[in-house]
Image 1 (spheres, one colour):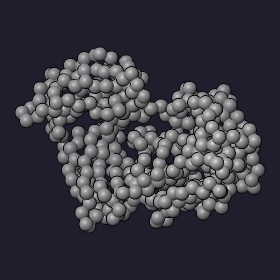
Image 2 (cartoon, rainbow, N blue to C red; image 1 turned 60 degrees about the vertical axis):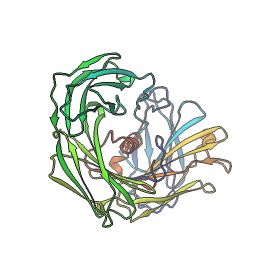
Image 3 (cartoon, rainbow, N blue to C red; image 1 turned 90 degrees about the horizontal axis):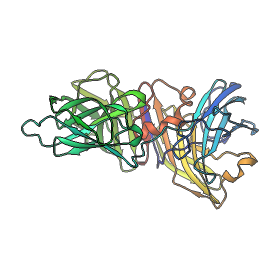
Image 4 (tube, helix red, strand yellow; image 1 turned 60 degrees about the horizontal axis):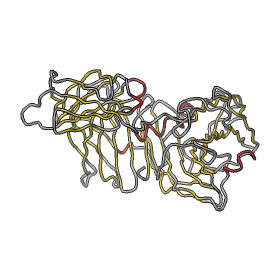
Length: 424
């Protein structure tokens, strides 16, 4: 799975009607597509159906039709083939709207517009963990757990560690782990309770395994290569383990060792390649620990570079170098017009180098940009997925793609790579 990002800000969606973008759309297939709209962060009911959201279909001939979602947040729409579909709904108020656009929608397509909840950590709660005594030479430890409950490692130069968790996880039973450099201890199942104490003083520290990581043929713009390890738990969550990385030598090589726990089903390695202008990320699932894992960076997906806006034509454009080898693009930008801010996310098949704000119907006229509108710096992402193509991934990109990049959560099967020309 691969992603390429350009000056990105995340959390919203959109796309336009026919614009002459230099992309080859799939064959047009008329029929029926289903759109589901759910609440996202900033809306009253995260993950719940949104009633009366606007769904606009713009056909290749420029004709437009509009539907509204039902009480279950869904609507079936007629498409004539390679239709651009746009989903508009207010977020916290009519002063802010989310607009999600999807290019090249055909018969049988399924689209989910919305998002997943994020930890708020407001009024954060705390549980105390008592670890076993340190072996000689060890003086500090870290505790990790599911990201949707613990947004960071808890640390102490002691065997007593205060672990802060999100209020939404109060009463939830989770798996926790503690590590101290090259040793670790499983804390087992822990029920999170504010003010609670978890006693694991009778547990035993165990040595971590060592895995070699080597990165070959790194592009000359890469300033650091790093590997991150995490493993999934129930409900689409995961537990981060740790990272290591280094600066490439003059031959584009980086090598280092990585301390890892015993292999668990579904563990994933996250390869991050930083540069002065952006980042590239590759996720892969790990079925067996190699003695040394070699990663040939020449296989990285293309970068969407130099994103720009043209307010005269209401377009976002970018450059793809080399030729696209991805499954979907994502363009994200905020547009403020006369007291209304539109969070516009656009998705489409790879190969495009521009996207145009759609001509919305009169009932959505307040969302249309004007010459006085203020456009944020645009973000462009290219995503490549080993087990998907555009037609099969369009259902989940609006809901999930931000999470792939930001946290490595809600990952689809297979390998994913993400590419950006600027760090989000």
